[in-house]
Image 1 (cartoon, rainbow, N blue to C red):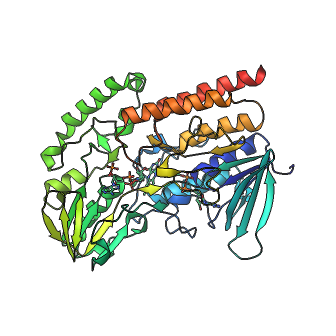
Image 2 (cartoon, rainbow, N blue to C red):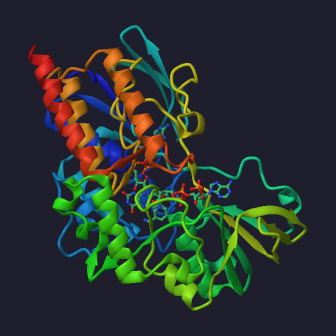
Image 3 (cartoon, protein in one colour):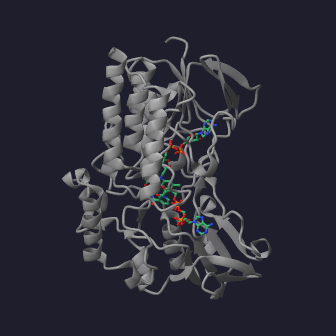
Length: 441
Ligand SMILES: Cc1cc2nc3c(=O)[nH]c(=O)nc-3n(C[C@H](O)[C@H](O)[C@H](O)COP(=O)(O)OP(=O)(O)OC[C@H]3O[C@@H](n4cnc5c(N)ncnc54)[C@H](O)[C@@H]3O)c2cc1C
Ligand SMILES: NC(=O)c1ccc[n+]([C@@H]2O[C@H](COP(=O)([O-])OP(=O)(O)OC[C@H]3O[C@@H](n4cnc5c(N)ncnc54)[C@H](OP(=O)(O)O)[C@@H]3O)[C@@H](O)[C@H]2O)c1
């Protein structure tokens, strides 16, 4: 092997697919992983202390949507495997491609600084020793974006003096702390639904508060995983047609969310990151979860809601999402203010040649096959088989993506990097073609 020219930060599902692609092309790289195993978020109790996985977590995108093209998931796995099966799949992937020895575990990247036509990367072993700085031509950031909890900002008035427990979904592991308690869950994303459902089975009472309604997608429709049902020629149809079909299917199979006591969503289906739950509506229908509007303020153990109603609680679980954070990049290099990072096709930093981001997307679908497609494109760029357009063209694409995002998705810090699964995969395939043409020219 030659002196590594590429540094990969992280060996979660995004980092390992970059490692696989680069290895297949004979590109020498270093991959640093803060924890002692691969799989990032999917390694329950990961000693990187960054995983948000809870004991009962299963994927909410079906197995067939989530698998890498280069290494399909075994047929023996269920449609929606649990975190252990998913972590095992990533372990098997790494061993199948012989990548384990290319990853330096328990080693954290603490600083990345652009220097000349490359980067200085400082790493520190978690087992002690002096930090070490190495030079690379390219850096691939795959540090994940669901590990830095976003608490309500500013916090709700009176929250500081709430005598009970307040925790963020990131720290939730098992339902034990909720047993026989009066629980309030805030949010209507996937964490909120999973935790409210789990709470409703063990808590004395469970209330679910939200500042807007949501369309709830079941995991199955007509016995078929929902994302496979929509994985048809329909994905090539205009958004309006996709929305009409999805709204029709939901109406036909579930009725309206308001039938279950949820507020009417203030947006059309596919205009927000999908909330997927097979159980929420049923728990609501059984009266085991009570819906509330968002929190207004706390007074002791009492919480007042936006409609003036109130309740007393022992535990409040904030399922209020995550911040995009790059602790190793200075603000002058990349700022992720309000989760907003300007990247050409969600991968390339236009001002820092050789700085790539993988998995920094929120797909309506799974991240892994898209991270794999991004990795193949990066493989082209790193080996000079592909070439980027001008900075001006990259900036224009970023501006038009941002504009389309703002037009379509509910204004929220969680909607700064949404992509349609199939459309984005085609976009990267087209970009690779163009990029190779540019290289040939
Ligand atoms: C509860 C939950 C459920 C989810 N369910 C799904 C799902 O069903 N389907 C789906 O597609 N997505 C899901 N997601 C989204 C999730 O982001 C992806 O599944 C996936 O974990 C992304 O992989 P990643 O490699 O980009 O990030 P991560 O899995 O977070 O991995 C990042 C890796 O980088 C390492 N790292 C970070 N910083 C450093 C550093 N400075 N130095 C060295 N190493 C570092 C970490 O230790 C970690 O191993 C879920 C997210 C959450 C929170
Ligand atoms: N596999 C699974 O089953 C599973 C389980 C959990 C999570 N996940 C994934 O993990 C990622 C994170 O999901 P998440 O549910 O943790 O976060 P999320 O999708 O960002 O949702 C956050 C929720 O909190 C609300 N919120 C944020 N700040 C608030 C505030 N100050 N006051 C009131 N409400 C506030 C948001 O409302 P607005 O929309 O109004 O901003 C939204 O409803 C997603 O990609 C999700 O799909 C998957």
